[in-house]
Image (cartoon, rainbow, N blue to C red):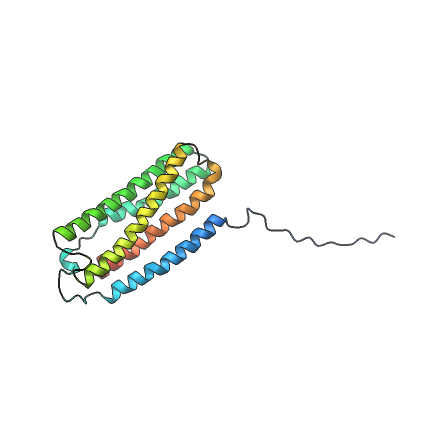
Length: 199
């Protein structure tokens, strides 16, 4: 008589079932950056209205609607680029990716124009008053993240034009897209705090 022995096999999780290391790393980076942004936002909110000398926000700030639309639209274009690469449409990916970069550059240009006006027309610098200190710290911290994002996006575009970003790299492109979406979400918070609540 042959005794049949039942064996229980535990299926090992496949590599596809686990999130990629790049995505996990990006989520951890975003969590850290979100904590840093929270400090700047809380500081800005705490010091609203506490400047003893002008200029004051209501006197010098203009609501940056067009730059905001550009940056938020870039979230849609990078999502379309990511989808195009995943589906194997390389040319379409490059087009949407390039448009994302253009929208980000337009946002940064508008920030530079605003700062030029505030510094040279209204004489508001980071050392003028509490408003200047918190404004340039918060908005500048965000602008720095946009700059880093644009450098990375441009690098990916150059690599893709050289043929080094095939469909197989779509997961890495998706991880970078997460960072860009984070930058856009943070701007919504900054916009509300600085240009709506702070005025």
